[in-house]
Image (cartoon, rainbow over all chains, first blue to last red; front, side):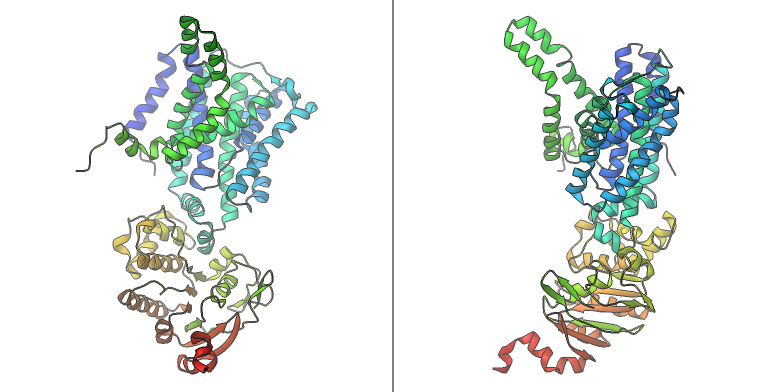
Length: 335
Length: 232
């Protein structure tokens, strides 16, 4: 059913060896983020890329998963790792009623509904202080000091997500999802219960994203509503991971995760400190302003990036790879 | 059945019965309500009033996918190929209604493609097909759901004479395989040659029903197609 291909196995081997070779905490942290985004991006890809129902609200599932883990520790005094097992299910519990009501909406209206869902949960987490501690957030004692165990758990989650997509895409479910994407009315006419299958698709997305959220709670040790229910840092990031990598491709989110975490870091560190160095070197005071605004402009830039990617490479790095190769003069010319 | 769209009565008390195994034609000028009737049978729109029975069961309130499952397949006037899927995948998606596993669905899909003469196109993306083949794909997809009744909506529009003959041949083969067909057309040649009985409508209302010959000679039908000028 799943044919292991050589390059995939090589990449997997490299990923397994990574923490043994790279000891720097910073890079380990970045790779954990990348693996987490592979999971979230894969989830988004199922509902948006394959089924064509674009979601702007995946942060809802992420945050719900994160809070599930956090509350297990904070309220119940149990290990936050319970959240990893159950975070996916709590996210499912939200996805079901939401999908049931909102899948009657199509296209942009559904997207707006997901946006609303995201914001509603962010607000709820902020004001329902007796449950979530509101803006104070939840702080837990981390189980491991080293990043390595978290890395391998993130890797396992990412691999599981990709395997899930691989299985789904080649199954009856996969055909049904794509049929719904291509033409919902035609799909209904050939006997597909589109409402039901859209919900199944959303369930996959919610479950994977919820688990990623729980992992985040366990790994970071601290969450608050602004971070885990963030529209721009989680929901829009998920969309970018999906479209930069390639919607409707199995490995698109993996590529997209890598690229987007790098892009995010460039912004957070203002070009890995290059801008700051430039400021010092040139002595121009206005460079200080530029540095400050570059690192804070990532929200705006992410928005611009979405538009640019859609215009220039709508099928992402994986989908438009031949086009990109040709643009860099690396492709084979068709004589 | 009747259908109102706001103030417009698109279908006004149209009533007919189709016998198992026949090819039943539904004709009328453009805008007379033919496609709307299909949309009502298939529950693409709900009826405003009236009932629809299939094999003795009242299917008026059933959802589109359930109606397909019960045995009514349909093609669309403006064809709806699943564009970014291959021809084969289009039909496999459809075959899944009756076959659970991918391999069984694929086998069934290949058979249907063969029946419709599309085998050479199987790896082509649906959107790259010319119109005549798209119409065949539309039929193939409907056939893969193993319908007892097939609703064909303007299968002949846009086809050249040789494609038309092929289409007629395919429809006859479909009837021979035991499937009842309701065909909507406004091209006379097609519907007159293959229908067993015809129901003619205009402005959403029934104007005639009978054998092709009877309907062709009916004054109201001639008027509907040629307008008032023929009486001037």
